[in-house]
Structures are given as structure tokens and as C-alpha cells.
Image 1 (cartoon, rainbow, N blue to C red):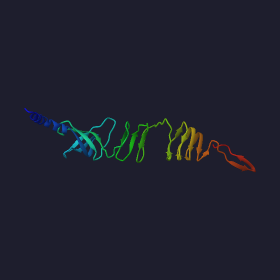
Image 2: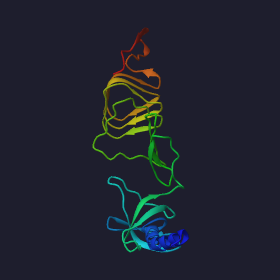
Image 3: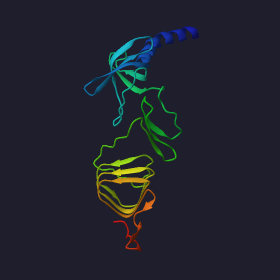
Length: 222
């Protein structure tokens, strides 16, 4: 047998296996996403124009995403013929963030993201609002607020609080340190070691007045 004959024989022998391997793992495009209970099923288009339906979308524990139409997926066919396929590693380059080495991010098609940067910053961008659904939220460092702040319950501040805009509170305020705000509205009681509102220091603020020709000043704010 010549060398060329040997090569042709090997190609003929491996051709079916090669075709099976190409079907086994294919790069596909998502056409449709639906649910069967909590199972997410994809309809995908594989190379050659064939559409596969009810392809289960497998994900890592603790993470979930609903891929948009046009996303890309790696489809694994366990049977080797597309009869029992699952979707792996579904992504969409149209909305992917460009990040630096060592960084990680969660993102959606609206441009919102949670970005862990290499300088230690965790950046959250939301188009509308961020909702924390928790019975308690703890912040161990400094809190800086540049927008309006509205509290509908009790505020307890163990240290200083600084706001660069209006503060509106409808319940009790108790602070162990300085409270500073350009404008503040209190519908409830306020107790603080010191407070400055609108540039006025309420811990030492007094007024001058004249009574029967005698000039006096009031005591501190109470």
C-alpha cells in the first residue's frame, strides 16, 4: 500500500468519527428562550441552518441569566446527533463589558453592571434604582451621599454624618457625632452631640433680643 493509499484509507476510516465530533460540540445562535417550570430551554440554530428545540440551558450554581435572542451558545449533544443536547457557556458579545486583567463583572443588555475592579473598587451602575431587600444593612466605612436622602424610619448614627444635599427625616434621629447637612427637614425628634444645618451650628446657636431696653441673648438651641 502506498503512502497516498494509506492516507485515503485513514481519512475514510476517521470521516464518520470526525462528523460525529463536529455534531457533538457546536457553536450555535439562540433563537428563542422559554421555561418549563424552573428549567430554561433554548431554541438554537446550529451551523448548516438546522434548528434544535428544547435545549436545556445548564448554568453554574448560584448564577443565572436569560440570554437574549442572538446570543451565542456552545451546544453539547450527548447522543452525538442532536437528540439530547444541552446549552453551555451562553454569551453575547454585543453587550459584553471590556474589562482589565484580573477583573470580573456581571452585566445585562441594558448597560447595568456590577464591576469588581483591580484597584479594589466595586462599582454598581443601575439605570433606575438599587434595591436592598434585607432586614439589616451594615456599612463599616464612610458613607457619602450626593443626592437627596429620605428616611421613613429611625436613624441612628454612632459617628459623624455628612450630606451634600437635602436630608428629610420623618422619624427620630439619634446621633453620637456631628450631623452636617445644607438643608434638613425633621418631622420627628432629633438628638445629636452636634448638628449643623444650612450652615448654622445648632449646638451653639443663639439669638440677640431686647427686653425693656435691656439687650440679651438666648440660650443654645434646644
